[in-house]
Structure formats: C-alpha cells, structure tokens
Image (cartoon, rainbow, N blue to C red; front, side, top):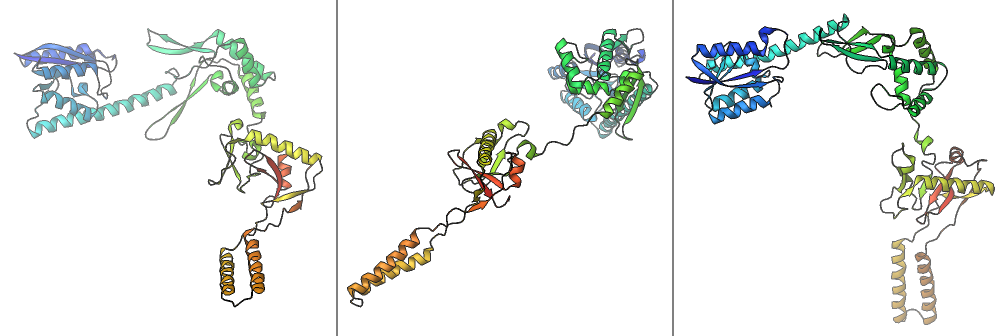
Length: 452
C-alpha cells in the first residue's frame, strides 16, 4: 500500500465550507482511498501561496528526502503555490527525492514525458493568473463597498473616534469616543478664540493631554488636525490601482466637531500667513563672500545651514596653510566688532584688496647681469680695462644685480570708503568692505574691488 503525505494550505479562514481545510481534507482522503493508498502524515500552513518559506512545507520537503512516504497529495495546484516559479521549485524538490505528486482534482502529475510537464506548467500558470484576478476582483469589490459606506475606514482614527469590532457581523465600525471628542472640541474652540497652533500645542503638552496616536503635541499636529475634514464626518481615502489611476472615496463617519465651528476655523486658517520660501544663504550667513584668506583666496563656508553654529570657514587654496578650521560665528562676531570700531573712529580710507602686485625680478635679466660681471672680470685680468675703469664697471653691474634681487613694492594703496552708520553686513557689502583673515586669526578690514 502506497504511503501518502497530505499538504493543506490556506491564507485565511474562508467563509464557504466547501473551500475550508476540513473539506479539502475529506476530498484528499477520498482520493487516496480510491488509488489504494493511506495517509501517514499531514502538513499544514496558514500563509499566502506567494511565499516560498513556509514551516509546514519545509518540513514536508525535508521528510521527502528522508523517504518517510511515497507520494504527496494536495487538493489543487493552487495549494502548492500562487506563483508559477514557486510551484515549479516545490515540485522539482518533491520529484527529485523520488516522491510522486498527486492532485485530488487532476490526479497524478507525470514528469517523465513532455505532455506531463506541459500539463503541470499550464496548471501552475493558470493558478498564478487566477490569483491575480482574485486580488483585483476583491480590491475592486472593496472600493465599491467603501463607496456604498459598507466598509469602515482604515488607517489612523481621528481624535474623538474609536474603532469597535462586532463579532456577530464580523465587521468593524467607528464610534464616538466621549473623552476624545471633548478634547477635540476644546482644541477647535481654543483656535477659534484666537490662540495660535503653537500655544495650543504647548498648553496640551504641559497638561499631559494624550494624542490620538500616542505622540507629542506640536504645531504641525494641531494644524493637520484643524484641516482634517474627518472631524465633520467626511473620511477620504485614495485607493491605488495598476490601471486607470487612483480612486478617491469619501465615506460618511460619525461627526465629532459641529460644522459651524469647523468652517469658522477654516476661515481663520485661510487668513494665516503661509510659510514663505526658504531663507537665502545671505540671510543666514550675511558675511558670505566678504571673507578672504591672507593668500588672496575667498573663504568657503561649509556646513549645514540649519545649524549655523556648526559652519566653518576654510581657504579654497589647497597649497595655502590657511587659517585652519575657523567657526563662522566667531568670525562674524569679530567682523561686527571691527566694523563698529571703524565706524566709531570715522575711518574714511582703507587699504585696497587685493593688494597691488609686487614687481618680481626677471630671471633672464638677472642671468645677463651675472654674465656681464664675469666678462668684466675677465677683461680686467686681460688688461683690456684699467683697474679704475674695471672697478667702476663692476660696481655699476653689482648695483644693478642687487636692485634685481630685491622686489619692488609700490606700497599699500589707500582708497576712499563711505562706511554706513551701523555695522550691518548688507550695508557693509554695498560699501565694498571685505575682511581678511590671517593665520593667527587676526582680521583686518579692507576695500574689495569686486564688491565696491
């Protein structure tokens, strides 16, 4: 007598008795009796057929390799898997262990010929197609039920409502929560009386009032709550679909806030000033572009603008030893103090930045003077020049060589500057003022050509 192992899988408890695990088990046992076998083991799983890792299935495959039975029976190919690839993998492991695969509805699957493999592959593919059709049908039915108001809203429950489950009907619905409704009414009334969202959040946080989701009260939570039309009985949900685009469904639920109060709150919300565009870099770092390293390069401000205290200034010149990592807030305070002192001292002239270029000696000209000195010495030794004449020529050449070795500097250029009455960075920028930072963190104020 052939030994059979029975595999039962369901993803949920069905309502129809004909498709229950007990019904499948009765059909499986009747099939095994007809083919002259006996069931020696039963394996169960309560999980989706799209999942490959299942406790009962893994145990079944392990026992197949141990030779504990001769055949495996399932009610239908859909019980093995809902994806064609998963079903093929399971069947391959069963057959490779020398165990037969039987289906109560389709009989034994023969894998030793082409038609048997084709039949199994077609059944596995139809099981996958049927699964997708079932999912789409149930999802569309859920949308239609929601549009008729037969399905309770899912997701977060607004403050003032609670979800209750009725075991007789097997459905859940939303009911009024008296304590939550009282708190929601208080929030709407406080805002209607002139309190800001931040003040309301601080008051509720100080009193320890509970939120609907167990979080903390803040301005965003209050504003989101005040704009939510679920408090007047209009719950809106968007159902996504692969084809046809999303569908927005509005379901009637118990009303928590009176309509008149809610509309007054909406009118006040409409008059509130909306948050403007994000602050610019100059508003957060007003000295941007006005800070220079002593090497002549502009300082780069690096860091997160949300945290100005962490921003540092670094020289853009990699070859420059630079000023290291100087915090912008320190440079900002030093520049304000330096500008305030200059305004108080009524400074009218400042040195220009960048400074005038120093004239550097020409290497070719210097080499020519050195050769001339050597030539004069040779001509003195040869007696072409007299001692007095040769000495005079040598002194003149050496003086010229000394002048070439020392770079000439025109000296600092002073330029007129019209400082503002206050040390406002924006006004200093218009006046063409810049600040030069040296390695010892000494800061000097200059007039920048590119900003004046």
